[in-house]
Structures are given as structure tokens and as C-alpha cells.
Image (cartoon, rainbow, N blue to C red; front, side):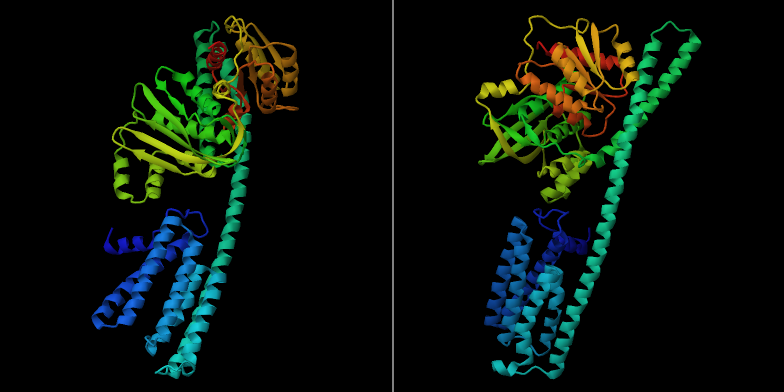
Length: 581
């Protein structure tokens, strides 16, 4: 970077307190530029007047330099653009008027006053800028056009007076025309943006529907092919089945890639604000990883004992943050056993609002040389965090946290990586004591004296598609004692109320009552009986947010179509084992 680039960067850098998406972001950049230029000019003229022994002017320049510096520092620390820009314009008016009335300005020097509208309207916008320009013209124009009234010792030439008025009016009209054109163009761009968002939303809905429609028959192909593969086939038949299975697996990868690409644009599509238990939300999310490979992954969780109440907010997005963050850390970690520490602390609390610090750290991240380069080149914290987000592919996590009103921070040392963010929640009902908090941190357990195995289990399958019912029944025929079928959520509730089930397999999209509503009603019933029946979601909904929505509704696990029957059986065994754990 050459010298000119450094000067430009210094002048155009904006405060970390102003978000890049804010309407004041570009004006904050202009304000920084004006402030730096003003400070440089005041400093240069101050030095010149020291040498020239002009005491009065030196005092005025010094006071203006100090006030401008203080205003700039306040802006960069607080980020209050409206206040700082108003102060800057007032200081500029006062300094200019003082130069004029103190008879310091020269005859031709008044022409420089004609550019004030360019400065004010660029800085303040049309409404405040026009008002400021009018005030400036009143205070300076009277003195310039009628110097006799104030008894000035010198007179401005008529030519300079006329030039001042013409240039001032020209500047005023030009900048207003420019602002009008800019506003029209911005309105057109906003219209195009809204149109693009609408088209993107329509595409997302289309992808979601197509994904769901493809996954259901694709799942049947996967399951049936696996079942047929267990039959006594000759070589030719086995070769044909293997070909079908390979082609099906390729289709599975294609569908998964479609879902993964569309995930980034689906972050804002759903909102699940509700009362929730923070500890239960985090623990249920961790269980998804420990169940997969409990021998290699360890997740010590520490939650402040002073968080003795439920929260009102979006548990789905909290789960999304932890799911994405842990998955990314595991993907970028060294081979072998991995430990990811989770720490949650209460920072502040009022009558209704609580501020909570979330921290995720590990010592097992693989070395990333680019991190050191970012820390050395990016001077601002905001710049470092943005660069690290991009490098570590935490874009989704960052967007989720920002949508919740928080901001992401990273701390790196040679041995440790730490990720932190702060969120505010409304307070819900308080727990009566720590025992209740501990009890509610996981779902109530069925107090049975014997262990329920999969072979002895009674399972309720909630599925509206007849073909899917047959496929699952055929797949589980040898593994499960009995499987009852409900065609929708309402039938599931009726059967749940009249019989005891050890496990429920729940579809999501069903007529009359969907799986989410049915699960919430089942969990509501269980609160009065101190029981808990594991529920596994079996769904073709596999886009970002679907898994979190299922878990937030009270389901214990999730499997998306298409799946291998062994995966479903393993998940069923895990849930049945958890009953007595």
C-alpha cells in the first residue's frame, strides 16, 4: 500500500460503532474525511500564525482544533453520527463567522465561503443540510453584502460580493440536484433489491418443496434396495441392484448439495420466539454430537448458577449457532479426541432483560497460519472478526448472531481458540430452586424398573403416506416388537392417549395436524404425568432450520430422508437406552 492509499484509508475509515448496513455508514465516512481535513488545515494555519505572531488567530485556531478533535474522538468511541455531525457543522459555522466578523478574512477569501452547501448537504443530508446552509448564508451574507452596517474597516468589492452570491447559490442548487438524483437512483435500487428478495424467496420455497418431494420417493428407493440386497440373489441380479443403489446414492448427494446451497439464504425465513430452558436447549444440541461419536468428542458445559429462570427468545437460532459452530470446529480440529468447552455467564440483569455471554473454546483446532496474518494486518476488531468469519467459514453463524442483535468475537492464542458473543433475552419464569433447574435441564425420565430393548419396544409410526408406512413397517419388522400406525398428528394423539408407547417416529408434513403441533401437545400431556416418550422426527424437510424446529418442539432426535435403515435403528436404540440413563 503506497502513501496515498494510506491517507485515503485513514480519512475514510469509519467507527466500529456504525454498522456497514446503516443508512449513516457512508455519511460517517464523509464525516471522518471532513474532520481529518479540518484538523490538518487548522494545524497548518496554526503553525503559520505562530511564526506570524498573530495571537488572536492562533487562539481561535487552537480552540477550533481542540473542539474538532474532541468531537471526532467522541464519534469514534460512541458512534453517534447525528450528534457529531451537528456539532461539526456548528463549529464550522462559528469559526467561519468569527473569521469574518473579526475582520481576519481577506477580500477574495469570502469566495471560499460559497462551498459551504457542498460540505453541509453532503454531511447532513438534504433537510438538515439546507437548513444549515440557510443559517450560514444569513450570518455570513449580511456581513459580506452590508459590511457598512457592522462598521468594518474594509469593504468587499462588488465583484467579489456578486461572485460570492452566485457561487453560493450555484453550489446550493448543484448539490440539491445531485442529492435528488441520488435519492431517485437509491429508490430504484431499493425497488430492485426488494424484487430480487421476492424472487429469491420464491426460489427458496420452490427448492424446499422440490427437496421434500424428491426425498420421500428417494428414501423408499434407498430402503427397498437395502432390503432386496439381503435376499439370495444371483450375480446378475446383485449387479443390477448394486447399480440401482449406486445411482440412488448419487441422487442423495445431489439433493443434499441442493439443500446445503440453499441454506445460506434461508436464515431469515422462520422465527421461533418462545419461552425456553437455556440449559436444556444447549444440552439437547450437544447430545446430537455425543451420540454420533461419544468416544472422540467431549463437551464440558458450564452455566452460571445465577441463571435461575427461563428465557424468552429464539431457541432454534441458538441451536443453529451451536450446531454450525461445533460442526465447523470439529471439521477444522486435529485428529483424535477433541474437547470443546462451552461456557455461559450472566453479565447483567434488570427487571425484564438479561444479558448473557456465550463462549465456545477449544485447544484442539488445527494450526491456521492465515490467522496470524489477519491479526497483524487488520487493525480494528471489527475488521479482524470479519476476516476470521470469512476464513473459517462461519458466515452462517455470524448472520444468525447478528439477526439476534449480537456480534461475534474471536480470541486466538498459540494453543487456544475462543469464540464469544453476547445476547439479550427477556426473562421468563424463575426456577424454584437449583434442583428444579437441574431437573428441567433434561426431559423427565420414565421411571421403569426394567430396560426397554428395541426388540421388546412398542413403537408408534406417525406417517400419512401409505407407501412410506409400508416401507418403514417392512424395514422394522424384524427389529421391533409392535408398530402401530397413525395417519396424522390427531390420530397420533388419540393413540398416545389410549396406549403406552416406548418410542414415536414422527413425520412432519401431514394433513389435519402436523408433526410439530402433535409433538408439542404430547409434551404438554407428559408434563402432568412426569413421563417422557422419545420422539424421532423422520422427515423430508432437510433445509436449514428444519432440524432445529423439530428439536425446539420437543423431539429427541432427527433423521432426514433419504436414510439408511441402520441409521434409524441406531437412533432408536440410542433413545431407548436414554430412558434409563
